[in-house]
Length: 313
Image (tube, rainbow, N blue to C red; front, side):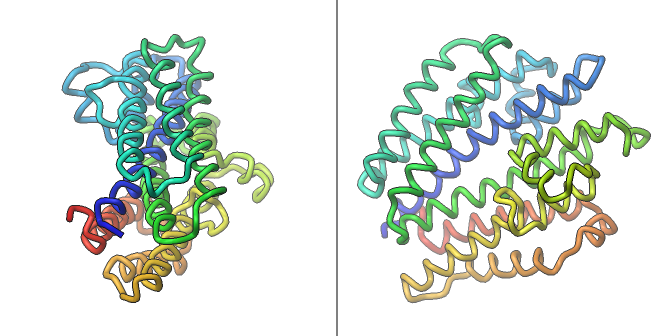
């Protein structure tokens, strides 16, 4: 496969995943802001930070009120990571690799872009925000569902899968990291009802609240939630699940192409480290340090994939 085609697939699915994750972050910000009697500025600042848009936001804004943050993350053209810009970039990549996509996938990407362009043509009033966020998640899910239902399980599928899992792992790690160090107002709140509400909001932002309750019977503690989102091998948005899945994708690529890659070695090392980890050891050495290290290694893997498969060739 041409490196340009592999790159288009990889980034198309990263951009779709990121647009959905941004909608989930905005929803989490809404829920957490409701737990505060004050303005909720800390919550909205943490949402911008988690989205990786802090620098871009501060260039044009001097405060973190809900209306400005939501508009910036959903539709601001000056924010390259806004939902509108991400979906447009995904559509452009889809058009570039059109011959590698099934008809159903292309139609869902194109239709999704047209629908979101109309829905986000103007600032979203608070009364309509839940519906708009649901629409964003639904349009991304339609693309992913049509892809999983119609795509051949070949190298094309592997590059799309890599993009989705690397982006999803990065997002889960960033949500947890920001929660632990930014959202909680002080150490006196650890274990309080406020702390628990915020941790539960993180579960909802990862669509993990129901599955967490099935597994733990509603026993909500920061350590159990952190374990569920990092080390649980069955949770589709956990770090462990994502690394296991991109290991399988890279193994398949190496088998199809008849050659080993450095990115495969990096992925296996990261996955094995997570498999041998315990949440007690993570908290003992520091959740922030653990997550920061994971984010760095996940990013390094992404860059190595680009190099190994000549995305810029």
